[in-house]
Amino acid sequence: AQTVTQSQPEMSVQEAETVTLSCTYDTSESDYYLFWYKQPPSRQMILVIRQEAYKQQNATENRFSVNFQKAAKSFSLKISDSQLGDAAMYFCAYRLSGNTPLVFGKGTRLSVIA
Amino acid sequence: SQTIHQWPATLVQPVGSPLSLECTVEGTSNPNLYWYRQAAGRGLQLLFYSVGIGQISSEVPQNLSASRPQDRQFILSSKKLLLSDSGFYLCAWSVPWASGSPDTQYFGPGTRLTVL
Image (tube, rainbow over all chains, first blue to last red; front, side):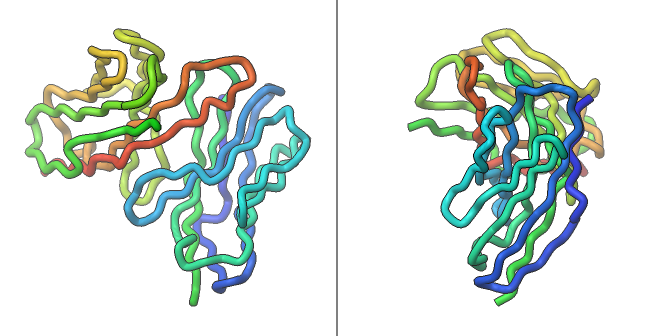
């Protein structure tokens, strides 16, 4: 079974600094997708960024970027110029190609210090 | 644009009472639909998913059930709630799978259920 591991239950970062959240996953498949979701205090899940495993180029979305290491099965999220609004739970998720559901990690709680 | 609605937003129910949570999606056809539960301080647990009307896959055996009476409506039910059913319930949708598509899931605002 596929598993997603987020080894950092909590992280903190100073405002305007950079932080990296780690995620590893276990799969024997080669065609899959990876996601980072943000859950602010409102608890609504918001897509931050996604990566197709067949793409070698790391995905970026404004201040958010990933470091995708397929051989190492690692998918870390880097947040640059951290803002107070970035404080939230961040979930890493994985899914296979096809009509398959997402598999989530247990999340990392990020605090941003003013 | 697509939107997803869930109601009620908050619900407090006694043990043994029935449950019905509703999720509807607007602006898309034949979406894949999902129900997740998030217990306090924990990650998301997939409960059910559906790729079409009347097609429900259950991920976790429990006293909950799901139905999809219409293309864009997904209902989570229980005949008798347990204390352990308390949590935050999230509905999500994605476009039907197509080769090469990331099938990103988009989440509703959630329902906070407290069973007393």
